Length: 173
Image (cartoon, rainbow, N blue to C red; front, side, top):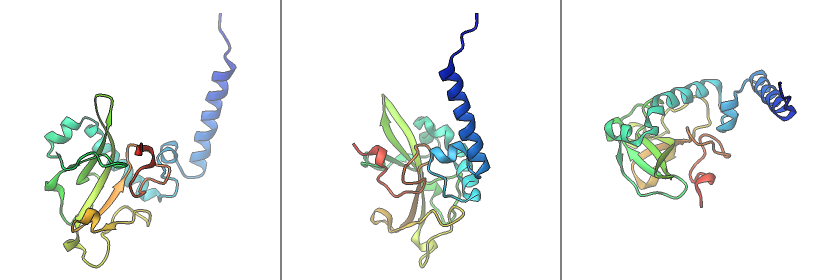
């Protein structure tokens, strides 16, 4: 005998309506959940490419095997910084972030974002070109170093936006 569960049906209908609404208005459910509503479509495509390229690094051991090394303590609101110095150059490549951001989670680490770093010498008078549109404002002399830096909260939605400056409000305890 089938059991009718009105709550499950209503939840399913509600999810469908939200999904259709996001598509009609040019967004996606993932974009909404990660603070990408105000980001141009071209930047959302770049962010998707960044996620595809960094998905394997949910396992920090794979990041280490690919040359990322721990370079900071657990910075409040940001996490641990794992840097791949071989990727630091004058090129912005969404699929090749120079820094991965991890936070403690259970018995391990959770990947929450990526940071892009370009030496100031590569672009001494203006921020480097980054993600499409104007949403990604680069930080000059980030952390007192001669670099331009830009964080993207690829794996942990930020209520302040995908490119919001640290600290991430959900990581403050």
